[in-house]
Image (cartoon, rainbow, N blue to C red):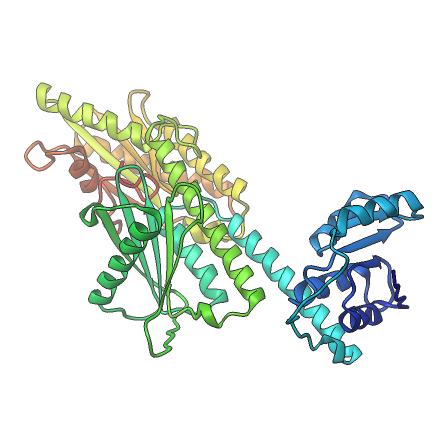
Length: 455
């Protein structure tokens, strides 16, 4: 056995690359560059990443051992180190081979770097770790329960777009019996190109995962980037990302993102970002699927939109059979996102529940109230003609403005959009048509919310 001793972290890094040892033992409190920083540099280089590292530290705090593992340490010893502990650690980390025998070993330039260059490298690696943590935090902070699917996809694509340039981002969500495409465009993309991308994704799923989809069952949504930047690399290259194992519920694809141009460390961060994004998207899929089977809205703890539509279907049948009047009204806080942009998720959910409670205080017990978008509510007034229902709706709106304002800053001003429609048996042949006719004029005409898509 031959041992080389070093006085500080920079010398340890430089000598490790020069000597190519079979084992590195680092004190976590080395001067100039501590043991954690040294391990991060060594493990980031292909010529050294397989070399085992043992950290030594005097702290008994478990967080010290945690940081050792995070930075690439293979084992940790408590100081003062006794001979038995060291011997056991050596047996754990050293391979049975007597040493490294490489015909073509990777070449590293670190051994020739000046001190300041090694310190800069350590700083850059730390910034990569912080970037990774920011990605993790930003994606995990997305609230899937209160955010419509379209807005969720926009948020995910915006985060990815803040890190990497691309001309077109595609998200495919796969439910049990349907699917939904979202095309996020940094500029205008021709329809024939979108069709080509769809075909390539279908072929990828068939070839790699033996998944066969019926294109006519896949809904298509077009989204335009809010970042206002266009990217052009002169050629259309499509990178398709799916999970390596497990059921495929989502697909992410990017045109001209330059995946092959990314460095090794960037590949890891890119893969991490897409993996987290897929986790959030699939969590939303399962949330919606569970909501389809539940009568309770997960946020308001009141009736779900699935239950509301089931009740509406029943009441439409009864109204046709018994010829009684029925009115459907909607109220939406149209500037809710601006009002709550600085609030936590729990505070946003709290405000949504307050709106629901305010509506229930004013409506009758026989009325059915449910949330159909982030802060949009529908309520069905049976045995009520249009004029009486309109008065009730106006009373509810004033009550919301008066009482919800108490929970907002004094400068905040609520903006309510209202829609209302009396049931017409000739026009409202389905509950979805009836519901669409009652939505505010500024809302998209559809039979369900963005939160409760295709229920």
